[in-house]
Length: 341
Image: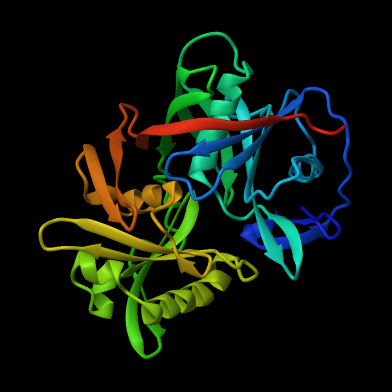
């Protein structure tokens, strides 16, 4: 993996990406370990870097880790001790490895729910957690919103590196999950009025009412072609500046949302410029956030997508908060690496 022009797209004010060029050096780090993990349903494995000490600037370590393993990687995550403030076992930082002008850079603007599970499992497997039972608490922060994500990890085969994982993702009932409001916007896309709702719960998603494109069935949604894809790209182009993401190539993630007459709910989203083969975990959380206000206090929401069906549970907690829970994700260790030489 080339590093001559490696750099980072850092998250600045209002989520506007800022490109920062950093020199990548192979360094020896004590108290840092790396694992490559596969999560069921994820588009790619996650390279997890765990540090026993809090890092003032995680980017050099992330870049060194990506360079060290000697193989292509699309996702990298860091876990290090959280700063003073919300109680958590670790703070989580995610970066997408992307190509930009012929260079490989780390883009910190997206989020990845599967990588949260990979990170929590790595911490569990490497014994970096304090003794005691209970969920692993990861501190995440996107769009200025801090969240404590609860990850439940169960060992299936420690020697083979196989685990079962789930997470609880809290909703922001202050309205932060709907940065442009809950009332759908109407965008003019190629002369068609498209109702769009933006949900930022993990990743920012722009949900387009599929019926506005004449789509009324699951088959019609799953076979939508280039015209629909082109319109979704334009939705992203129009909304990105309003969300402080004008420089992003992937955010917000546009998706078609279809409610069928038999009560079914289906989603088809773009990943970068092409159709996603399934539904990202953050996409599942986003669509559940969108319909949470009309769901019962405890409800299993099933969402159909090109890869099948995924289920998320909405729970109202005794303190009035609401949590989305996803369970039963298989997490497998693919490899372990030393950091540096």
